[in-house]
Amino acid sequence: MKREYLILPILLGFAGAVAYLFYLIWRPFFAPIAWAAVFAILFSPLHRKLEQRTSHPPAAATIMTAMVILIIVVPMSLLSILLVAEIVQTYDLVQNWFNAGQYDAILQYFQEPAFLNIREQISEVIDVQSIDLFSIVSSVMQRLSSFAVSQVTGIVQNFSKTLFSFVLMVFTLFFFFKDGDRIVEFLRDIIPLSPARRDEIVGRFSEVIAATVL
Image 1: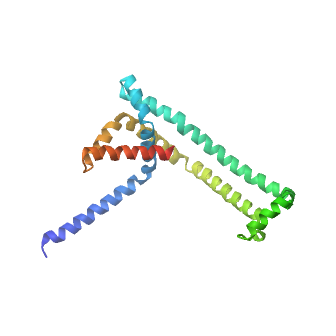
Image 2: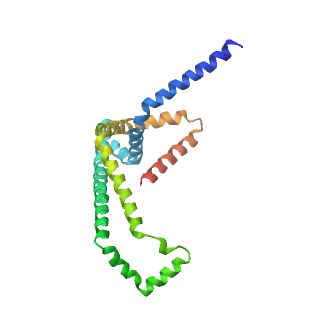
Image 3: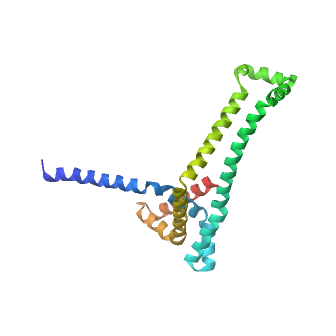
């Protein structure tokens, strides 16, 4: 066997191992960098207008980064906290509601002729008698409450990690705003297609990102 045939697989295996280790190192940073890219793409039209008025890319990037934090990050964080609190309170409210016997009082409304007629029609497809509404609602609310509490607990326990991810996202977002055009040009250059097809791909990608977020 020639020496070249033996060295090539070894080099390829070594390169693959290094690439995998490099991926493991950078994997925790993928999410904040991806969010920074999404926000940069979403607010790119506004950033271009601001950059034209200021004629100073670093200042425009700083203003846009602060604007994204104030418009998106802070309200979404507060909304998430309020949503978790509401889920937990709603679970307790539903439990107390059922324990107080109000569930039975509401069931009396479904004994009206109109509801009984609908129930008979549904019973032809679904076995309504076997459905326990209390168990279903209680199970769903308990799962939502447990999920919400676990998310809040995870954020609190990993506060330093969450804070680091937020700082990394803001830092990356600033440079995406500041050097976004150069990054896009670099990506266009490495795409092995005609300039027209490159522009179409980049434009469609931006449209998909914006439409998905909206």
